[in-house]
Amino acid sequence: MGFFDKLKEKLTKTRQAFVEKVEQIFTGRKIDEAALEDLEETLIMSDVGTKAASEIMSGLREKIKKGEATDVENVKELLKKEMINLLGSPVPLVISNSKPFVILAIGVNGVGKTTTIGKLASRFRSQGLSVLLAAGDTFRAAAIEQLEIWAKRADTQFVKHQQGSDPAAVAFDAIIAAKSRNIDVVIIDTAGRLHTKSNLMEELKKVKRSIQKAMPEAPQETLLVVDATTGQNALRQAEYFKEAVDVTGIALTKLDGTAKGGIIFAINRNLGIPVKLIGVGEGIEDLRDFVPEEFVEALFS
Image: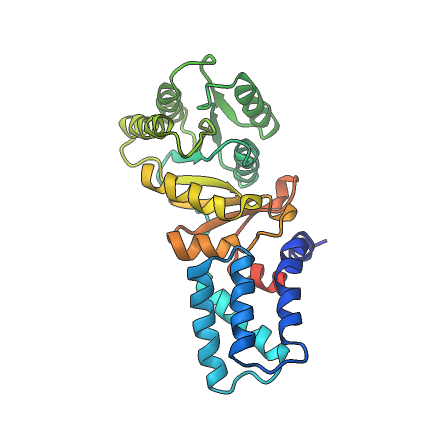
């Protein structure tokens, strides 16, 4: 099965929550303002969010006024175009020539951060890059062990301190080690923290300052890992993290287990942070670059 077919299959729940309702709205009805209001409400209820839904509907209404929609299939095609336009062009995670290229991975508990790091490490190794993983989640012994398992599986180097040690020191040591060993990519794990806990957010800022002491231009990527199944709560998490550190991209996990895939549109419109990676399964190959057109096509297929 190719990735597009897999994406179609994994988006089944989101499709049922949204696309099938769109078809129901317009079947046997005129394409009038009442139907469009129902469509806008469906978008909002599918976690697309008020701002994104309003923007999509504004473009759609314009096209309908111009007589471009005659039936439900036309409406779906126009809707697809508006959704793709809103998401814009792909913004992949690209490793620059800066060496080491440092990725700081952040997010709350249970979003799949460690797994995402492991899958990324495997991807970079398959591209012939050397990788070092840093166990910056020093609060849970299990977190250090989990990451070490991934490091062995992906054939990467690994830096850890004892449980309970200073995460900022782990990050600093990892970058110094990577410089001395001529490593291409460093991925730094951090403790899964509640976004509402200000002391933990301050600690995250400290980790970032420590990274910049070791390498002023780092981290070149601050990747926020978000669980799609949390819907609008994912948006609130992203807002808090964006305030604390400069988030450069989002990895949206667990799209295969949710009807709330519409959150991609809300994140894009409300925060202006690009979704760079999506996770649609447990396999290493199931973490992919986010391609907006491919995502929307799979959603409507």
